[in-house]
Amino acid sequence: MLPNIDVRLRNMVKAVQEVIAPAIREDEKLAQEQARLVIGQLGMLQEQWKNAVRYEAGSYRLIRELAETLTEFVETGQVAVLQQALGETAETDQLDIDALNAGICTIGDAIDKVILGDDGKLPLSREAWHAIFDYGEKDALRSRVWFQGNGIDPDRGDLPPLEEVI
Amino acid sequence: MADPWDRKAIDPRQDVILERTLVSRAKGAYRARTGDEIAAMLARYFDHLDYGNPVVSDVRRMSGGASKEQFIFNLAHSGVAEPEKLILRMDPPEGIAQTCRGREAQLQNAMIGTLPVAPVRHVDMDGEIMDQPGSILEFVSGVTEPSDSDAHGVSGMGSRFDDWAPKLAPQFVDAFVKIHAFDWQSADLSLFARPQPGTNEAPLWELNNWAKLWWNALVEPVPIITLCERWLRENMPTCDKVVIVHSDLRIGNFMFEEPSGKFTAILDWELGHLGDFHEDIAWTLMRLFGNWDDDGRFLVSGLLPREEFLAQYQELSGNVVDPKLLHYYEVLNAYKCASMDMGQALRAAEEHTNHQEQVLTWLGSAGGVFLRQITMLLREEI
Image (cartoon, rainbow over all chains, first blue to last red; front, side, top):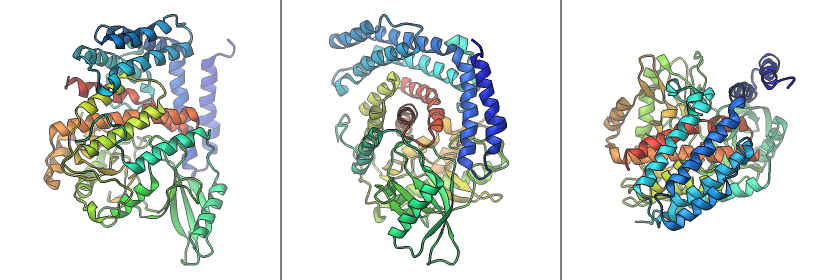
């Protein structure tokens, strides 16, 4: 495509840095902060956009795997809830980021129901807890790697490359 | 003991705020008001309060904070020879947290004489005159991060204190000690429900507040957050001693003067409530609010190592930190942060109901840090 997305993002950063930010009055603190955040967000988008669909597809696969695993450790009625969500999302287009997100939400809603177990009336086995921990560790790591450009994570120096977790 | 799954057990005023959030959200996108609009609103407000000949000038937006709109302005009126410098702190329809300006004002004013705080002069907690809930505070000078530092954070996170830490750390610990020793029963805290000591009311009300915020805001399900809620309900402790909990005393929420380093104000009392002191201690220990020094030590709120912080707090307060309770509140606080960052903040950003949605999505992108923390803390238990 001409012009390509990287060029346009870089142009936007340059425009904010060299034209917009210097034009903001010294006493306009909020506007200054917003300009800095625009530069920061565009910087993160530059790093992310080429892998965004792959990242969301990875999130979809992970939550789907968790739902499948949980079917082995929960009661019959809860298995049905999970299987219905898995069935509804089985044909999700892996190249459509909105469809992937919708699939994540459908499966996630079913998992939430299982975890809450009718507000604690249904037990949650130790195996189920640990399956969710395993998922949670992977999910948290992926999220921290994906958003490390925000500079907030105090342990970002220990993070692996994106390719290892995507 | 209350049923830990009773979701209706919640501080009544806080519940009003959460219900009001849904009404505000339904009204659609929010456009931040201009300085001229704010000046006109303030003139109307001070006129309503019977200030003689009020004239509002030099209205300027302030940065900082992740949820409230803040403006600095001058107010001239017949009662003063020189214009007064004041702060307007106002609620957009939605922010990272949904809180009550009236409760905040009660806590802040109760602390006058105990800790440095900005006195709250007026409150319109339901926006009856201002059209949005807001409060008027007296101006206090100071900085939240050293002005000679290159490290600037969002809402304080990412700031560094370096050589300032020895001056600031003792005052930081002292603030916790004074808050937790405060005789709140004699103060006007009429907007706060009072949990009974020896029951689970304090943690239950707090959990229900954040769980309701999460479920009302839900953008995308996050299994570990739901699992965390279950654990918090199934392991809920009692609170034997009820104290004021600031709830957000950390890097970015205290102001000091340069070059002395003397504290000029403890900021952001909006999350304050009555509860267990462990909740405050656990909050400030959160990894997101700390950073590493050049010697490789992780510093609580960028000021001092965890063990030093805990030792000094216990020595000065006489309160004994119970590791089991501290752990519970570390989990609850990680849950709160996740509920704010990955729920309420992102919902407000999606609905365009805030004045600085970029800050909300920026903070929301830190959600993975809390998910990691929750998983690590809970794995120790199961």
